[in-house]
Amino acid sequence: MGIAILTSGGDCAGMNPAIKQFVDYCFDKGLQPYLIFDGLEGLIDGNIKKATHCDVAGILHEGGTILRSSRSKRFFEYDYRKQAYDNLKKHGINKLIILGGDGSFRALKQFYHDFGVEFIGIPATIDNDIFGTDYCLGVDTALNIIRGATDAIRDTSASFRRGCVIETMGRDCGYLALVSALTCGAEVCIIPELSYNLESLGAKLKEEIKNGRMYVVCVVAEGTKLTHTLVDWLEHDVGIETRATILGHIQRGGNPTVHDRLMAVEFVTFAVDKILGQDTNDGLVIVYKDGKFDFVTIDYVNSSTYTIKPNLLDMAQSMTK
Ligand code: F6P
Image 1 (cartoon, rainbow, N blue to C red):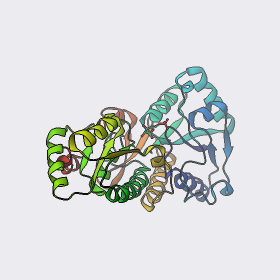
Image 2 (image 1 turned 60 degrees about the horizontal axis):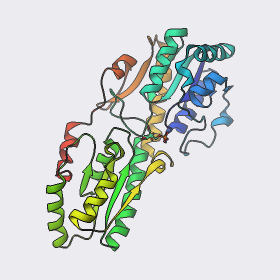
Image 3 (image 1 turned 120 degrees about the horizontal axis):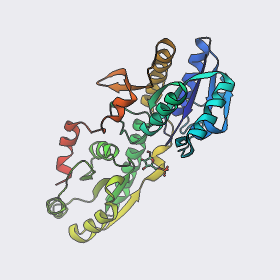
Image 4 (image 1 turned 180 degrees about the horizontal axis):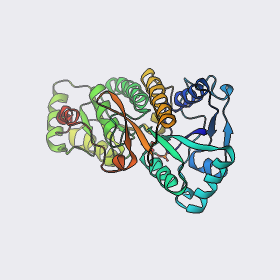
């Protein structure tokens, strides 16, 4: 029996500690772990090697993924999946651990149906948008990067009596923006999940500025596509000079926080135990729900869309109207 790990989709901090734990833990269990480079593209191209301790030495504190990643279109085609399967067969690999998002899990479910290669998915995306889990690897690091940037932008905004509009990533999910707004003391938070009223917000801010407010911090999720609208609104309706900062890919990198390192170790250890010990049906995903680790099916993950907890949404209401 051979077991391999790969990283797929958008990279995130926490992937490297997960890869290291995978290799170390497999060796502890007397197994030879394998590494697949370049995600599903590397699986197709046979970019696979036997892992050594040296491969993972000194990577725990680094962001990104030493295995690199990809978003593979070729994997949708049966012939490329067959090529990927033949590559695995050459190495005797019949079990996979994949770090990525639900799209990657779906791809491996199809792969299981084609060739019976068992797998467990570990949710890893800064977007925190996977249904069934409260936490995805990389989120805490991304939030800390956003916090650092927002603290710094507030310093300069306050020095110039300016507004700042800070755009976070998250695709269609407002989790990063919402938590950042709550933890960075934003005045305005605009996310896809919440309706907003610029008229009432504007009136409130104008009053506060009249009473001495020196700056306005507005956090906006990229999924709203409202960044430039908000700059115009602050400048022209609220009447405060404003700059926009699109944080972009800085949110995906950086040294993993302690929380992401620990989550990486726990996710991987439980996932390896599960895939070695028991039938994983047609693929499972390890989730972290209500403070506990659990395993759910890919169908369950795909059965609905992630929603932010209502209490967090409630707490942000005052920043939307
Ligand atoms: O899914 C992670 C993510 O960083 C999203 O937040 C963002 O919308 C997207 O990936 C960016 O993708 P790319 O790195 O391909 O530009």
